[in-house]
Length: 109
Image (tube, rainbow, N blue to C red; front, side, top):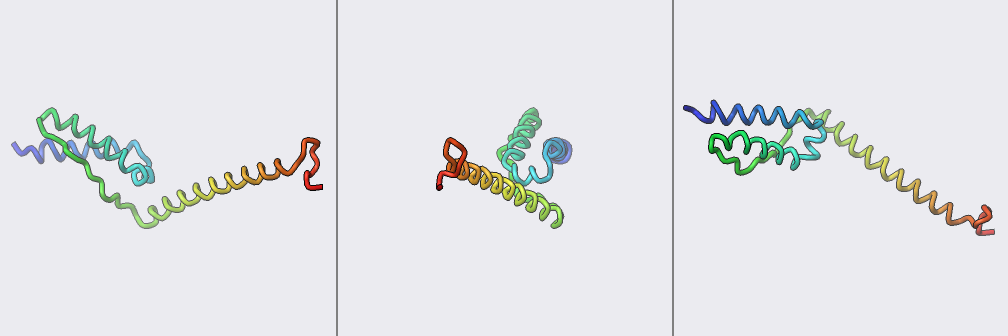
């Protein structure tokens, strides 16, 4: 019996499909460690029944199209820019609030 073809490869393919379907494409890149851990745990359970030890799962590269990869990067940058803008707005609000006295007039006059 060829364990690789009949047990190992099908288990790997099924596990990869099952786990990666739970993540968006951008999350596959961002949450690579979490994805690897889920794949490892599932493979360990499936292959352990056949006394096959899964020592490590290494996910080196997800190959997406260049356009898709760029869109992921742009989305991340936009989210970071939005967070920076929100923080700056809060900072300005606090600064304005500290420049006013209790009666509502500018404290510099």
